[in-house]
Length: 74
Image 1 (tube, one colour):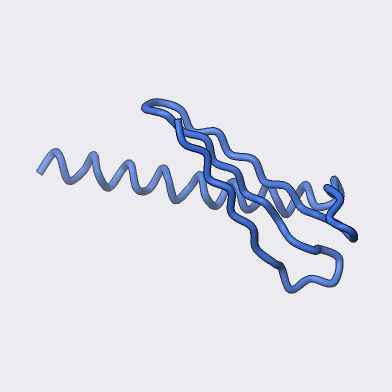
Image 2: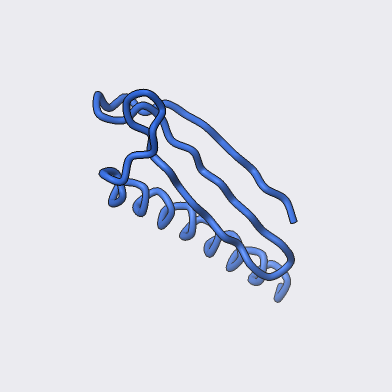
């Protein structure tokens, strides 16, 4: 199992950064996205934005899996 922590800054005035954690093994992928507020405290107020980022990542994973499966059939 590998854990990847990625930090980045958003351009929003109400968001002082995010942390994306991805844990995966051979069959499962677990994703968590945390937004930070002032003084690096976790902020629950960005839940919808974080959920949107997770859904976008999920869609990319699903499309990648579909492409690999289609290439195997050819």
